[in-house]
Image 1 (cartoon, rainbow, N blue to C red):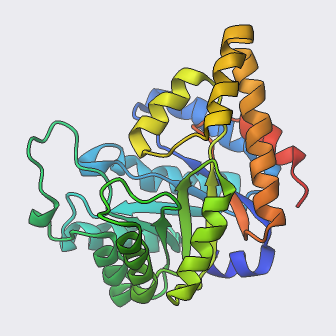
Image 2: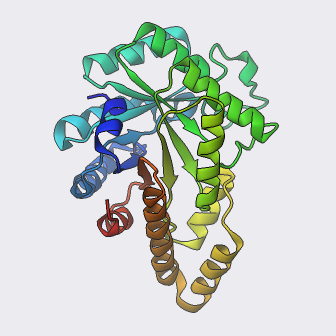
Length: 290
């Protein structure tokens, strides 16, 4: 099924993101999590794709099993880093054979351990190149792209970032999923700016439940998102007074409130970053009024 059509037919909704465990020994526990969160009736689940070799070999098998064994429509991530036309073509043919019809096209991060990596040397330098490749050769695939309510760390300006996302839509992205953020005003302002540029496609906001102060700082350091000062202070106070358990409770409450306000404000749905754990997203999802 095409996620592009499902979004239009079933808003508002919950969608989820998983990453493939690197070791197959962890797959049994991973699929137990998938089965648990199935209770939320997610519209789809995205499966990440390791940069430069990482876990990309597992993406297809994980996505296939999520669809076949657990009845959740998968969206496979596909990055341009380290990609060639032949490699992308092979992956997309495999998707077709597995009856997977949805892709989230990304540039991806530079591969770890590669000194002086230069995106300009890549055959596919931008996510827009991947989107165009898919739409030209595999028009039956529903393609989505990434969006950044807070500017991408490498963008020279907010406007250039918006223009790049507009180009993704122009090249064929039918929906967008945002990087995580914590201030809903950024999302709604971002949507209006995109519409003014003519990029009027569903933009699904990404929500990350904070489960510990340490993990929050690590994740935010990777993606560049900012925690509002009052929320960060509250998390730090909770950690001092009640440790990780208190931080978890505060994080879940904040994520639930954030997700509900996004839905009430007109977002097509919310995309919950699971971190391959069930408890937090189950608690959030079951408390949402959708």
